[in-house]
Amino acid sequence: MATKDSAVAEELNAVTAGGVGLRHIVDLTTKEAEGITSVEPADDGWLVNVEVIEDRRIPSSGDILAVYQAQIDQEGRLLSYRRIRRYRRSNADTGEAF
Image (cartoon, rainbow, N blue to C red; front, side, top):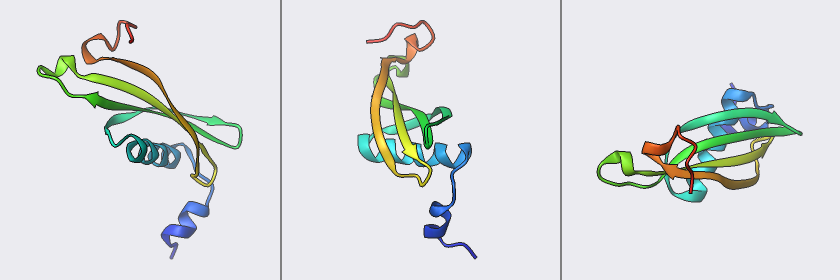
């Protein structure tokens, strides 16, 4: 039976890397995650993009969302993170960012 520690020691795949990246972003930003927007392999690890709610508004179409990118290694350790986009929910598809 694998323990939690031994499971982390195994090499990550896209699904597990996405979950690990999401947890890192939520822990660091203390914001609620909307979901994982992308997971891609990187040099010796993964890049995980996570959409979070930065500021709730009424109506919800005015919510301020952001996409954060986490770079994690094959063991799930966070190497870096950064916000790469911030926008209103109502402008999510128009490319208007601020």
